Image 1 (cartoon, one colour):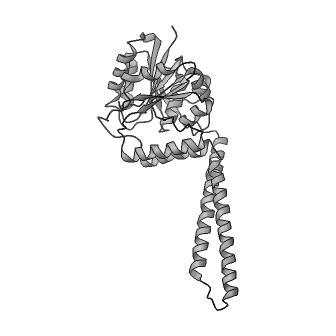
Image 2 (tube, rainbow, N blue to C red):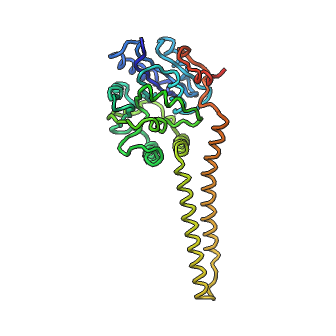
Image 3 (cartoon, helix red, strand yellow):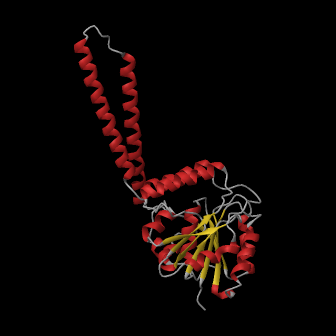
Length: 324
């Protein structure tokens, strides 16, 4: 019997919550599918708590629960890539491990997929994230519109469903900096939203710190567009013209008033501005060059230390990413 639905859940410090999330997923999916027609894929992103022990018990109790355990923390998007690599469903649905993305509404996303829609994101009616997560989401949305061509009316979220062909296309990406929204939108323009409620987090705190959010934003910023380099070039040109005009003004004023004293403060300020701009541009170029070097050295997106109920699902590419 073919698998119709794969539910992929990245897990990090969710030992106290993931059992309830899986129970709710089961209760919802079993209203439509038999156990052989769906699978739940849980990816432990090297949680420092006992999350993997909880996942192991879930896998031992149910053969349609697959578990992957990372050797170190590679991030949520790498966890999604790993989950994709062992998924078999005709539709793949991704959600969070904290219960804020309600499993009871997952078929709203799945049922929206049709001939005219390959990818469906949940649009939260009211978000229950912290203020800096909300600010980060808004900045990420602006970036996605300008850099990866996201339609302005499309809302991106971590709760989404995609067709099989789209997941297979995303798996062709082997660089060490996966950015899921960019990969998805690069492969299809047939994306839509479905309104979904966003629940309050009952336990624990989000695994996303300000540092991790910035890292994720930087991945999307540099992985799919050269526009930042073009912006840096335009800034450099603008400041060069400004400096040239300032020099002309100083020369004219000096000719009109030979007794005018040359201002060291203005000279110092100009050097400071220009020096800062040059360092900014060089840093941006260095980021691209550094990432290109890392990609050429082919480090893995992730390394799997343990896997449960996954042996028959590993593709050749996924198997090479497994730890010893």
